[in-house]
Image (cartoon, rainbow, N blue to C red; front, side):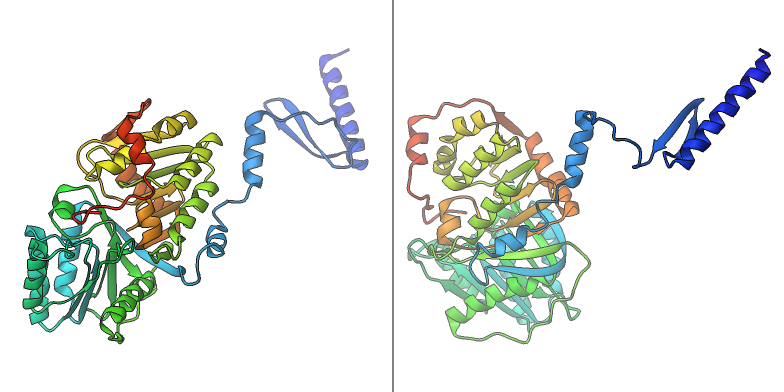
Length: 445
């Protein structure tokens, strides 16, 4: 047959076949790609036996069908904490400040700009050069007519024993006109919060919170952080101060600027009242660890709570990547030894343990699944999770979580030694079985 006639015959046959199939509803489209005839078959065609999809495709489909486990996290948490312990604080602008110089460069100008009030609730105010710098700066603001109110914890600031340098220092603060109230010592109940709230000099209000106290250790020597906050979270943070101030003085404070809504991460403020009256922050950590599906990163200097450690082991056993950073140069060696007593079980489960080498690290931060993030005053020992007054911010926001990972975790892991095997010594085992770990009166927690 002539080749042209043969080609025409074949083409005609194909056209007739396609037309017939379309009329029967069998083919809804014909595509040509690199000389290959492809057809998409309608649902009316006879069923074709299932062919297993490649594993990668199945995983993608499964992931697409799975809801984000963090979507309902705070709703679940609200049912686990005491009433008022978790507050939806709306959208906030959060500026993460790592280490003392970054904090000083931010908070000192803010203090200088304040025109009406400065309220500080702090666990420890050290009687050293940095403590004196803040004292003198605040005394100057008092002379300018700014109301300055300060709450110190007697235990944390070494004010329990008479005749200490710290007692003399606080007496000097009062002589300078600063309104300093000292929360008295109670067994197994201390005020460990770190809250700074002030007006911004332009009719607004701003705040700071994190792990950092005031003194040379925090602003010079140690690795630590505060976060500068603008937005509705300030209302709950300030209320914590206002409530404690009224308990100490009987004075009801009011007339403060309303926080302004911000275009930033949606945040929650979680508070814990000590004396073993609630365990709100512990419940939050346990729920977050059980929620995580991909990775958990925690950095904390005092890490001894058995329930949190057990939850991390379970997470690692379900193939969650768990990374924990603690300081090698811990100011509380008993705490480090207690945590080391758990190293064999953690390592066996697959938890990555890093001991930060350069200096004491005092951060209390966590990121999970590159979404959930928390920072604040609470450690992960029984003292913080049961006996202290604490305050943390928590949020589910990928951008802020990424910032925290870049600024803290990635940097600190690079400066840490990973512990891949460990045999606890007798002191590790003893410290690991202490019923609770409370610091001595000179503690810097």
